[in-house]
Length: 342
Image (tube, rainbow, N blue to C red; front, side):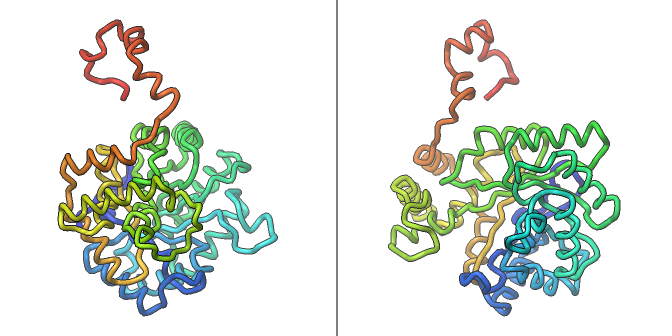
């Protein structure tokens, strides 16, 4: 395992993060304590130090197990958790991005994790109701109090993240250093706005869903059951075609489909720093996912995967690429300019 700097910070994290949504059986599809510990140990023994959890994962059990597993060497691990999602149904202030829920949720996470501080606190989901300045000021207060070291934002529009980091810089508040999004061969729409924004602001991207909930392993091609409804985009005709190519590439390279899908997610958008979140219900699955550490997809494989999964970027991106627009904008010198909009 190698290490990367997280965003524009000096924080050193492993090149894969361990997703712990599977730690606990409350959601009927995770792992019990013993198997969760085996997964954790396999990751840690491979050199991993970046743990991703959240207040809602398995009704709080995930945080409790993470806290237990890191207790003997707390300062070695970079623990990331999230706030926003509800802790009490029917109560509007036990969820959301606002300061009241932020402070309450963080205090509860600290207790479940049995720690004095959170290394990285994510805003889990943009709630579209809380002012950006309220979120930023609350997060900055947590950092100044020493309860949180760094902040990141997950599942939010690109313009919100850009607005937030610009505001934070101007006001001297703590800025987001990382962006968590769904990104995979099945979900490439972040290439429109989110990934270019991350590149512009120097944010590290930690994609979730790199194997498409198992769809890219070929499980649905084999008619295996899963948690996804039949009409899910991960079980569509397009998803099946992509999965078939993933399996083809995996066979050609002598690796697993999971390894191909995970490696594509971090290789496709270079030079953006990408740290995939890998989760697993079993130690065997985790070890298989870790195999992507030693994989580099050759150009021909990347071409096959990109062609079958390509999307339309839409306006204004496709507009910029039109010959007439480039001629008008660059006066026929587009190919002679070193730094250009792509």
